[in-house]
Image (cartoon, rainbow, N blue to C red; front, top):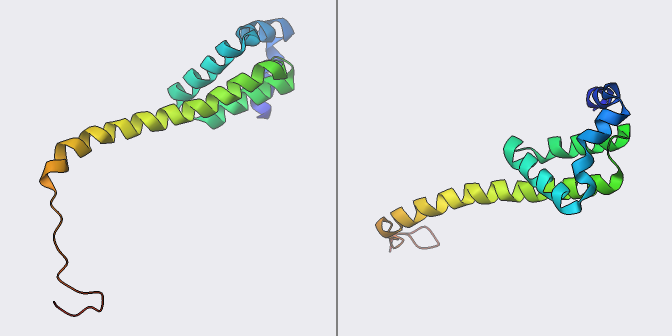
Length: 111
């Protein structure tokens, strides 16, 4: 995190503030958090960047909260997309699976 913080500090305050000017609107910050997490598939990285930007003064805390919430929502979007790919597989193979009756009782002896 110190590397990212030093990078923001090296930009200068005007450049760093301009980079996060979009976060003035909460819905935009939320969308950026979702999109960033979906693209890099890491809510931890998105959150770390937002927290580091707050620590270096480049982003106000009010702008970081929607980004962090968006990172958490982005994680569920990624998981949902993966789950949806398995639904198609289950439908195509659902007609082929037939349960078989058990040939052993609970005690282990043959019926």
